[in-house]
Every structure is written in C-alpha cells, then in structure tokens.
Length: 226
Image (cartoon, rainbow, N blue to C red; front, side):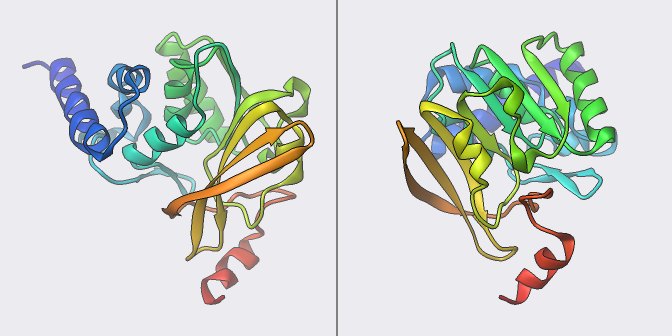
C-alpha cells in the first residue's frame, strides 16, 4: 500500500469509526470528509496522527479540531449546496475545505498571516477554488460579503458577537462555541426575520476567539478561575 492509499484508508476508517458511529448520517457530509486529505492540513512531523480522534496543534497556539467536532459543527449548518458560508478562524484550512465540498462559496477570516497563507496554499493545491481567505478580526465577521446562509466559528467567544448575528441571512444558522476557558457550550443560533433562536448542543473545548469582540489574553487566562 503506497502513501496515498494508506492515508485514504485511515481517512475512511476515521469517518466510519469516529463520525458515522457517533450518529452522523448525512451522506454528503460523510463523502466530503472522505474526500478531504486531513493529513495535508497538519505539520509534517505529526501527519501520521492526522486521522486520530483528537485535536492537534498546528502552531501559533492554534489547533485543528477533532474530526468528530468538525463533522458535527458542519452538520449543524444543514447545508444543501447553494449556500454562502462564513468561517471565523481559518486555522489549518481543514474546516474550510470540508465546507467547500458542501456549499457554493466559503469566506474564511483569519487574523494570523502565517496561518492564512499556509491554508490558502493548501486549498489552492487541492483545487478548492470556492474558498476566499481574508485577513482580519473575525470577531466582527466579514461585512463586505454579508449576508451569509451559515456562519461557523472555530474559537470560543465569551458571548455571541452581535455582528455575526447581524450578518446572518434570514433563516441562516450560526454555529459557535460560547463560554470560558474551562466551560464552553457549542451553540446553534438561527435567524427568523429580526428574531434569533438558539440551543446548546454539547460541551466543547476550543481556543479563544481573539479580536475586538473576543477574549483578551488576560481575561482568557483569568477565566480559568471563574
């Protein structure tokens, strides 16, 4: 078995045992996860760990989320194929790659130049041309392309930033971790005209959302004691 076949086998096993077995049955999503080479989005020295059931460090204090969490957050957007989606926190680019297989247009905002550049290069090499990466403060969304049918946030906010709610299209969905360093819930918000409805899905652990409407490093560290 060559390298490509080995990674594909690991990917298929990941989808079967970590994701489908945990109750995610959306076939479009499962096929997308099988089609995205997760090992391309992690540092070379840990590429052998890319398909394991855990988050992994990708540098600059950031992580690539556990495969199941990527799948769950994506499923919660309920994508049909024609949507415009905003991702907050490009990170490795893996979540954007999965979204790109399921929606028409992806806009992803990253505050770190090094991560944005690396993700853009990998996405281009994989011919995922429906993803645009923007450098900026993701806590304020990306107003230039609003409204969005879905918004997915890959870092924990102390509370939901108002610009993200404002940038949702009617009936659009926002998936976001909310809470402190030690106590976060994954929330789903949906817009109905000028009203918003939300529910909590499960407890999660994410790095902090940074920016004007996100966590300061000092407050994040102190939240450990709240």
